[in-house]
Length: 606
Image (tube, rainbow, N blue to C red; front, top):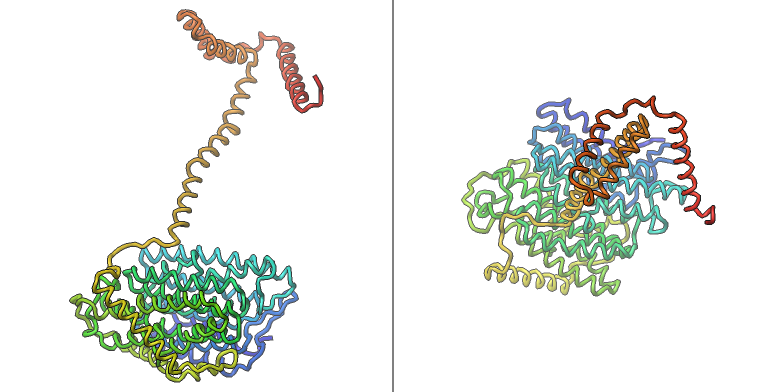
C-alpha cells in the first residue's frame, strides 16, 4: 500500500497546477515545490515504500537506499536552482514540461521495480521533448522529432528487454541485473541510449542547444544522470562499460575543440564527463562506484552552472557562437566570475568540486592496474580543460572585443548561478560532506601534497599548451560551420532507405500490382470473349515477329491490315464458332499443362 508520498509524484502532480496560478503566487509556488518534495524525502525512512500489487507483482514507487538518496538529493537541489534561474519566464508550457521532466527523473531514481521504472523512463522522454519544442523554432521542432524518435527506439528496446527479463527470471525487481541472458542485453542497450553511448550520442548534441535557455539547463542535469544511476544499480562491474566509458570520455574532446556554438561545446563536454562515470561503474568496486556517484553529483552542479552562464549570455545578447562573442567581462562581470568557477570545477582545480570527485574515479582506475585506461582518461581530462575549461570563458568573456554592450543578467539568474557556484566551491573545499552521503564508506583524502602539485602541474602545462597553440594559429580557429557527427550516417541511411522505398521498390510494387491485378485479369477477360480469334491474332503477331525480314513489304502491310481489322472487329461473331471445338481446345490445353508439370516434377519417367 502507498503509505508515503513518492517525491517524483509531487513534481508531476504539482506541474499541472501551475496554469491555475498567477503572478507572485505562481513564482512562490514554483520555488516551494522542490523544497516541499525535498523535505518529504528527508522524512522518508530507508527501505521500500509506496507499493501496489499488480498482476501478482509488487510495484514499488519509493525504494530508498544510499545510492538512490545521493541522486535524489542532487536532483532536488538542482531543480530548485534551475526553477529560480528561470522564474522570470512567462511560459506555462515550459514550466509544466520542466517540472514533469524533473519529477519523472526523480521517479526513476526511486523506482524499485522494472515496470514503474519503464513508465517514468518514457514519461521523462515526453517531458524532455516538450522542453525542446517550447522554443518554437523550426530547428527546435525538427530536433525534438529526432530526439523523440531516438528515445522511443531506446524505449522499445528497453521494453523488450524487460519483458524477456521477467519471462526469464519471473521477477520485476529492479536491482542488480548483469549481462546474463538476452533480456539483460536489451535492457543494457536501452539504458545506453539515454546515457549517450558512442555512435548513438548525437541526439544530445543535436537537441540540447536547440531548447530554450531554461530548457537546456534542465536537460543537462537529468537524462544522462538517470542513465548513470540505473547502470550503477543494475550493471556494476560490467567490463564492457569500462571500454564504452573510455571512448565516451575521449572522442567528444575533438568536437568540443572545433565547435563554434558554446552550448554545443558544453554538450560534447557533458558526454565526455559522463564517460568517466561509466568507467567507474564498469570497474564495479565500492571505491569506483563512490567515485562515479560523487562525480555525477558534482557534475550536475558545475555543468548546470556553465549552461546557466551561457544561457545568461544568450538571454542578454541573443548570441551564443564563439565568433560573435568576446569582451563581455566588462558588461557581465558576475556572470564571468560564475563561469570561471564552473570552468575551474570542470577542470578539476584544487578547492573546486571536480578535483575531489574526478580523482576518485582516476584513483579507482589506477588501483585496478588499468594503465591504458588511466592514460586515456588523463588525456581526456587535459583535453576537457583545453576544449571547455579554457575555451568557454575565454571566447565568451576575454577574447577580442565583440563590441557588444549589454547589462548584467537578471537578478534571479545571478542568484541561481551564485548558489551553484557556492556549492561547487563548498564541495571542493569540504569534500567530507559529499563523501558522507555516498553509497559506501569512503577512505580517501584528495588533498595530499603530491596530488595537488601533480594536478596543478598538469593544468598549468595544459594552459601553456593552449596559449602556444592559439598564438601560433595551430589551435583550430572558431568558424561558422556544421560539423559532421555520427548522426550523419543514420540520417543519410534513412534518406537512402526512403529513396529505396519510393523508387525501385515502389516501381516494382506498382508493376506487380498492375500485372497481377490489372493486366493479367484484363487479358484473360479479353481472351475469354473469343479464344479462337485471340489465338489467331497472337499467332499472326508471332509470325510477323519471326519472319518479318523474309516477307515482302506488301505482304507485311496486308498481314498488319488483317490484324487491325480483326482487332477492330474483336470479339466478332462468337456464335459461328463451334462451342465443342472451343471446349476441346481448353481441355487439351489443361491436359498439356498437367502433363508438363508432372514431367518436370519427375513423377512420369520419359
